[in-house]
Image 1: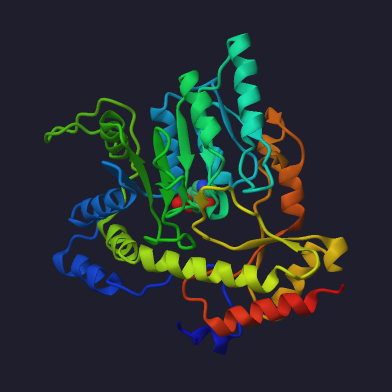
Image 2: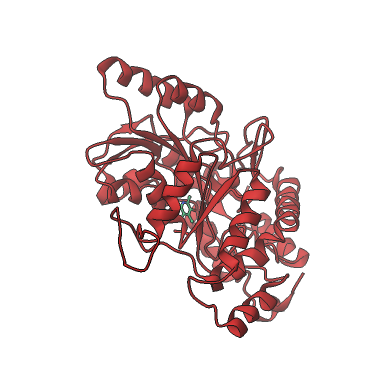
Length: 382
Ligand SMILES: *Cc1c(COP(=O)(O)O)cnc(C)c1O
C-alpha cells in the first residue's frame, strides 16, 4: 500500500487508511448541507454496524468514552456502586465509572490475552455474594484486539444477575467462540478514534440485543429530548451524538472492515513469523476459540533475554523513525485510582514494564514492516 511515509522517514504506529467511499460520502454531506446531527449517514452507519455484528441495535455516540458512560448508566451503575474492570486498559475504560460516582475494582491480567483474569473475577463475585455486596456491573475490556476469557465471567454474572458490559473499542472484528465481541454481554461499546480499526475521525457505538436498552441509549445521547417542538426532556441526558460528517466517514470505513481485518491479520502473522525466534521477545498466545482483531501488534521484551530494556528499545526505534509506544500503563498506578480496591498481583505491571506496541496500520507497507522487524532484530544484543 502507500509508501508516501518513506520520504518522511517515519513509520506511524496506527494511522487511518482512507481507501473507500470516504471522499464521496463527505462530499455528499457538504453538498446536501447536512453536516451536523441531521442527515442520513448516522442511521446508515448504525445499520451497517449492527448488521456486521449480527445484533438488532447499534446506537452511535460522539466517542467510545461516551458509549461506555451511557452503557454503564443503563446497566444501573450509580454513586456508591462498585464495578469490576481490568487495570490493564486505557484510562477511558475506567473514567466513566467515576463519572457515575461508582468505584472501580481493578482486576489484574492473565498472561494469555492480557485481559482481566476470570479466576479472580469468579472468586470475587462468590466472596461478595456471601457478604451481600455484589458488584453492580462487570466491564470486560478486550485489549489490543484480544478477546478476554469472557465465558466463565458471563456464566457467573448470569448466575448472580450482574450485567456485563464489553469495552470492545480495540477489538472490532474479534470473535469469541465464533461470536463477535461486543455482542456477548448486555451492551458492547466501540470507538472510532483515529487509531482504531475503523475511524470516524472520532466516534463510538453502543450495540445491544435489548430493545429497551437501545431506546434509552439513543434517548440519553440526545439530551433525553421528547418528540415534539417544545423542548421537553424527561431525564438528565447528554449531548453525545455523532454528526452526519463523522458517520459518513465511519460508514465508508465500516464498508472496508473485512479488508482491514484481512490486512491486520496479515501484518500480525508476519510479525509473529519473523520475530518468534528472537531471544527475549514474546507475544500473547491468545485464548483458544477466539480470534484477535490484531488491532495493534504488541510484544513483550524481556531485558535478560533480549539484552536491552523496553525504554532502550523505544529510544532506538525513535532514532530510526519508527513510532512505537509502551503498552497501556495499569490504571491503579494513576494517582486518581491508586486507592481503589484491587484483585490479583502484578501481571499487568509486568506487561507494562516489558510491552511495546509495533506499527500496525492497515496501510503499513511491506517494506516498512520489514524495516521495523529488521530494526528490532538489530537492537537485540544476545
Ligand atoms: C479508544 C478506547 C476507548 C475510548 O474511545 P474514545 O473514542 O477515544 O473515547 C475506550 N477503551 C479502550 C480500551 C480504548 O482503547
